[in-house]
Length: 93
Image 1 (cartoon, rainbow, N blue to C red):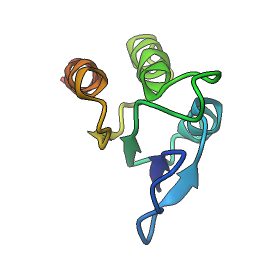
Image 2 (cartoon, one colour):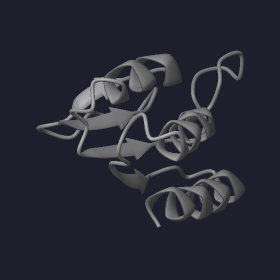
Image 3 (tube, rainbow, N blue to C red):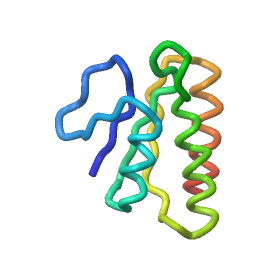
Image 4 (cartoon, one colour):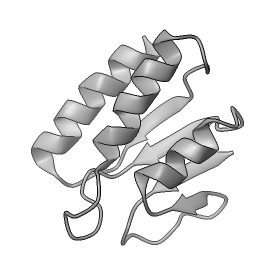
């Protein structure tokens, strides 16, 4: 499964759309996610960001609960994208 976390962009064909980190994490827990694409800014700032998915993933992979999927960052947030990309590379090795 390919998961697309974003609150505003159109969902690419063939992807499962989620709007919030909790939804992405629920799908990641199934271990059926092969690729996840993350946005940084989500909603009005009241909710968490795409970085929260990476924090969860880092722990889950380190503890051996799941294998890391491929991770893509599609955020326009300059600093968020850089931080997320660095973290994704650390998770995927």
